[in-house]
Length: 276
Image 1 (cartoon, rainbow, N blue to C red):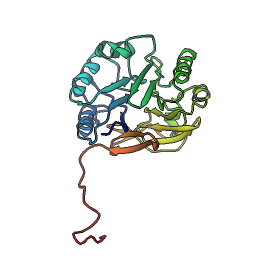
Image 2 (image 1 turned 90 degrees about the vertical axis):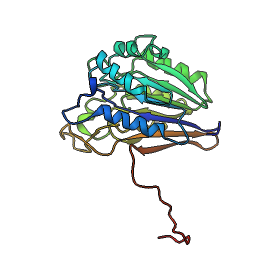
Image 3 (image 1 turned 180 degrees about the vertical axis):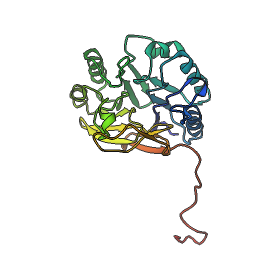
């Protein structure tokens, strides 16, 4: 990869259970994580880092985080961790003591520079609640970080999307103060993306003058049901992740990537150079 290009892979909603137990007696989230790790390890060019946007484990127990840690040993790329509503901050910190950016403050906000990009993570988790919130101190921290580097392309990350998806049962556990976040993001045009998880689907929306992107789940997906009172169901649609590519003068593009091995690739032309 040339120095001018920065690649950030985003995976989300791992929901790891201890010792590889199945979620909902059906979903092998541990095997799914190993599949996405294998896919990420084979990417050419290689991402500069992998961000994992929350719901790392299912119940926030020490055993689950140990299972997660053992699985992530297979990842041959640097990675950054964020909590979601299924996570426990203290157990996460204890399981990954070498991740120093997690070890300070009550909430797990952090700032990282990855080549030509700044990453600003907000901890939107609320203990024992499915919905999300970022408090005044977090918003002030975000505003200060953005003001320091007004010309540095930036990704803002939080587990809960700052918009409603139309999926009724998920919209009842949203980020509860998106307008407060929008008031800050909208003042800083260097914010290239607001990245989230939580929805277990690939969803995009305009937000505060930028693009908000939600990563799909790496194992199971939330069923696409746009009724206000549709049931809370999941489906085993193909899992995926997002790959964010930044290049100066060209800006940011985001690719939805499938996890696993599929037939191909094949050329579009036959041996005589004719289109089939």
